[in-house]
Image (cartoon, rainbow, N blue to C red; front, side):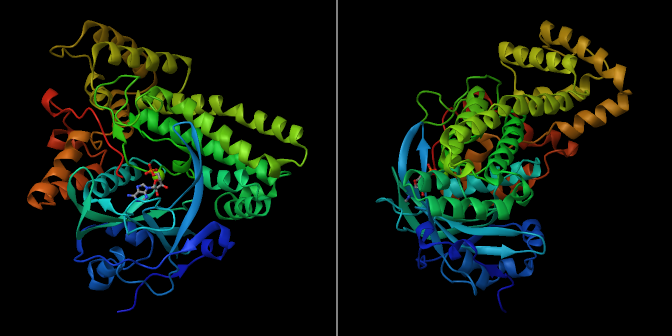
Amino acid sequence: MSAPITFDNSYSRLSERFHQSQPLQPVQNPALIEINPSLAAALSIDEQWLTSEEALGIFSGNTLPEGATPIATVYAGYQFGHWNPQLGDGRALLLGEILTEENRFDLQLKGSGPTAYSRGGDGRSPLGPVIREYIVSEAMAALGVPTTRALAAVATGEQVYRETAEPGGILTRVASSHIRFGTFQYFSASQDLDSLRQLADYALARHYPEAEDEPSPYLGLLDAVIAEFARLIAQWQNLGFIHGVMNTDNMLICGETVDYGPCAFMDTFKQSTVYSAIDQQGRYAYQNQPSIAHWNLMTLAQALLPLIDSNEEAAIEAAKASLETFPKLFERAFTDLGAAKLGLTPSSRSAQLLTEFLTLLEQQELDYSLSFSGLKDRVIPKVIADDPSEITAWAEHWRQALLAELSVEEAKARLSASNPVIIPRNHHIEFAIQAAYRDHDFEPFKALNAAVTDPYNEALATSVFASAPADSERVQRTFCGT
Ligand code: AMP
Ligand code: MG
C-alpha cells in the first residue's frame, strides 16, 4: 500500500536559515493509541490506512513517508516577558505539508527525538502531555476555536525521564502552519532583513493572500493577525479557556491555538485563575489573556517595523495605529460571543447582563460552564434549590430581555447552540492519563475524547464528563509537558 499523503515542503524550500534537516530517530516498540478519522477525511487521507502498519511507522517517526523532508524550524520568543534569541523545534519534527484541494497543512511529529534546537533536552514527550494535547485540541476544534489538531497518538514503548520515569508518546499534529510570532522575531533580532522579508512574503501568500493587494502588504499582515487574535482570545475568554503559556513562540501567525502544555478550562469562575505551576506571578491568568495578546502583538509589530516602512518613525506610527485597534476588536468580539451565550442580540443591555452575571459567578464561586449551560432551564421561571438570591434576581432581568426578543423555544435553542455541555475538564483529563499510566488502559482517554468532540450534545448533559470536580478531585496545578 502506498502512503496516501501528498507531501509538499514549501517551508523546507525557504532559505537554510529557516531550518535544519533532521533524520528520523526511531523508537523501540510503538503502539497506536488513538487516531482521528474525521480529521483524516478532511485531509483526504484514507481512513482505513490510518490503522495500517505503515501509518504506525510514520506516526512514530520510524518510517519516512514518501515525499516528506523532515526539518526542525528555528524561532525565538519572549518567554514570560524575557527575550530568548534562539529557540526552535526542540522536540518536534516537521515532516512536510499535506496538500488538499484548497489548502496546505503542516504535519508535525511532537516528541520524536532531539534536534539541533533541543538545548540539552531529550526531544521526547511523556505520554501524559500527548493525551492532554490530543483531548484539548480536538475539543477546541469541536467548539469552533481555531486550533492545531491531533491526527494520531502513539505510545513509543520507551521511557522518558522527568521527575520519574514515564511512558513516552508522540503526537501527530496538524496545523495551518507552525510559523510563530517568534519566527519573525528571530530574523528581526538577528537583523536578517532578507529572511524577514522572505518569511513575511511566505506568510502572506500562505495565510493572508488578501493583504498582498493592500498598499502596504506587511501592515496588512499585521492587521490581519491582530484581527485573528482579537477573535481568538475572545473565544478563549468566552469558553473559560486558560492557555497558560502565552509566550510569543507559542503564538501562531495563522491564528490557531497552539501549545497545550499547561492549559486548562476553568471550573469555578475566578478572573485571577492560573493553573500553570511555572506561572508564579500569574502573568498568564485568565483575566490577563487579552492584554497579554495585545502585548505579544506589539512585539510582533516591532519585528515587522523594517518591512512596514523604511522610515522608522513612519513605520512606528502606522504600527501603533494598527495596534490601537486591538482592544476594540477584542471587546466587540467578546461582547458578541457573550450576548450569544446569554441567548441575546448584542447590545449595551446584553453587555451589562454579561458583566453582572460574571461578577455573580465569581462572588458565588459557581462553575463557569455549568452556570451558562444551565441557563436554558431558567427560560421559564422555576424554583431552583440552593439558588443564591442574587442569581435568582439577575435571572429575572435576563429573562425579561430574552423573552422580549424570542419565544421560549427559540431562546432554549439559541442557548443550547452557544453553551457547550461538555468541556475537557482537568480532573477528567488527569483521570484519563492516570488510567493510561497505571493500567495501560486507554479507554477513559477514548471515552473522554468522544465526549469532548460532541460538546453541544444535550444527551451528554448527564454524562460523567459534564460534571464539575468534587473538591477532592479539583486540579490546582498543571505542568508544561517538557
Ligand atoms: P514550550 O514551553 O513547550 O513552548 O517549549 C519551549 C521550547 O523548549 C521549545 O523550543 C521546545 O522545542 C523546547 N523544548 C521543550 N521541551 C523539550 C524537550 N523535552 N527536549 C528538547 N526541547 C524541548
Ligand atoms: Mg511551545
